[in-house]
Image (cartoon, rainbow over all chains, first blue to last red; front, top):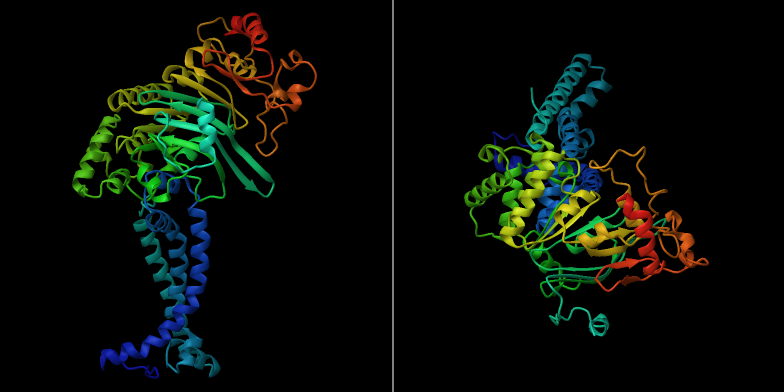
Length: 153
Length: 360
């Protein structure tokens, strides 16, 4: 495994992907922990719903009951949390960037703060907040796709 | 003789001996749920038997174990913490001992269930059509999606949903209550089940729709020669539909017999209470209805002796505290009319003729 270093996508796509692999796994593992707990909690709730019993009564295989009937219904709150996290992530992942010595948004933000570089701070805050807003918009649209009862008007 | 046969098999469950078990034969079914507060004896020794083309009505108050009985037949308690015992013979197979996979093959295929409250019993994220198609294709994987959808449209039409070709692509929340119940029935019927369990299929429906649904079930029964278990607390519905009635109280059968016997010559004080509490349209209006006093027992703390004794107005008929200490047996009066009561049959007959019959 090569030591991750950032290579621009336009220079060498393979190197780019290799460089991003380890940081991506690191971030994924941090967030996976909370998603596992969240999914577990909502699945427990969903699996006691009447429509799960109906699915079983139809003779649907248990694995299909869990994936198709249970997970689908538990997805809504998980997507909500994912939207929040996605917005935050785009605004910079400070620690991960430090660990892999990436010069990313998070790194720039920290440097700007220590150097009281006000214009850069303002710029990053605006960028990060627009990411959060956009991510939430995407989530709202996704609600409509997941849950047919949600009407987008 | 039947009894000895039963006893020998009890020690050796799982043997499909194919003895005289009828089409559906439930024997001494018990379903208990261990909870933090104690053991909930939801069903405590229920036995009944029906043949194809017959309907049995299971009646009783909320919490008397009706729904748990029906769900136990489908094996829906298997993955829960419930402790079940007894035998459920369906067409020569003991559903209590078959493996999960076999049970799954039977569910929705040979035996199907119509659940109460179809809003929560249908998946909100899938179209009604998709849910019926799933029910068909899970047991007939060779059926193409188009063919299954065509069948779903036919089924929706069969249960009286107008413009089924359009409705099939709608979601449950776009259906009205009555239509949802019909869609639920269509789903249960999708594989022509030989045993149909209807758990309060007409509760929450207005009487017009109720009559249509009952007509529909009767029509389907004559068409497919299905056996039907009708669970309800609506005595009118049972009177209309059932051949046999099983009255449940506190997880046990208290009265069981042919519909005419139970309706016109009820034997158990609880059945008397149920029947005399019904409002009558064809009689002069009495001042008040006569409810059964008290509340149904908690299934964790079933009263000792006869479960009904705290509410029974005829307890004084039995000397001593027998009602409070000894659980009465379910006894046959010779006409396959079974009653679980300590009052001697002859005395009950007298009470019935003098007190109850004039009020029925």
